[in-house]
Length: 254
Image (tube, rainbow, N blue to C red; front, side, top):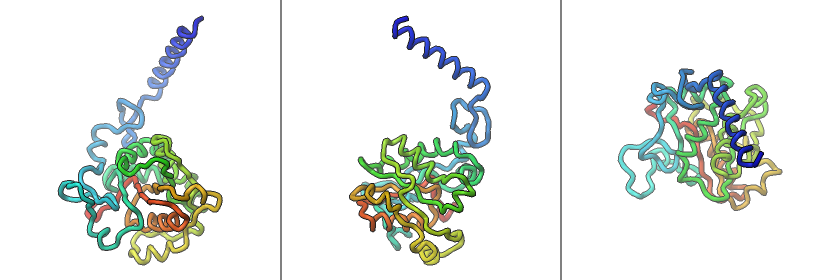
C-alpha cells in the first residue's frame, strides 16, 4: 500500500471513530446541557444570556463604558482616581447571568473542561494586549485551597491561553505564601492590607521574568486588589510591562 492510500485510510477510520463518538456522546451546551452543533459551545438561549463584553471599555481594567472609541486612552472613574499598577487590562465577560453560573461551575462545580472554551473567549478579548515573548502567569492559589479544589481555575485558563496563543505560560511563576481571608465585602484598603506580602515570585522562576512583558490571568476581577499584588511583585522582580486579563469583570451595575 502506498503512503497516499495509507493516509487516506487512516483519515477514513478517524472520521468513523469521530462519528461513532458523536452518536454516543453528542455535543451539548456547556451552559445547560442541551444539544448543540459543536463541542464546548453554547446553545442559542445560553448565548443570549451570556454577557460578553464588547465596544468601548476602560483601557486599564476592561469594564464597559459608554460612548465610542476615539483613538485615545479611555479609563473609568475608579482607574482615574486610583491608577492600577499595570499597563492595560481586559475581560471577556461581565460577571452576571449565565457567565456567573459558568464561572461558579468552573471554580466550585468540578467542571475544569469549561476552561478550554473560556480561554478562547479571553484570547479574543485580549488580542490587543498580547506581545511577542510575553509570559503568561495565573493568579496563584494557596496550597490548602488547591488541595481542596484539586485545581487552580486561573492556571487552567492561563495554560489553555498559552497553548492557543503560542506564548510562554509559567503556571507556578507566582506563589501564595499564606492563606488569605475572603476579600468579598472588604474595602480597597482592607483588601490591600490582607494581601500585603502574601504573594511572591517562585525563586526558581525569577529568571523567566527579567525584562519580559507579563500577562496576569484570573477568573474574576472585582476590585483588582489580587491582580495588583501580583503585578507589584512581578515589577519588583524585573518584569517589563504588566497586563491583566480576567475571564469576567464585576461591574458596579452588574
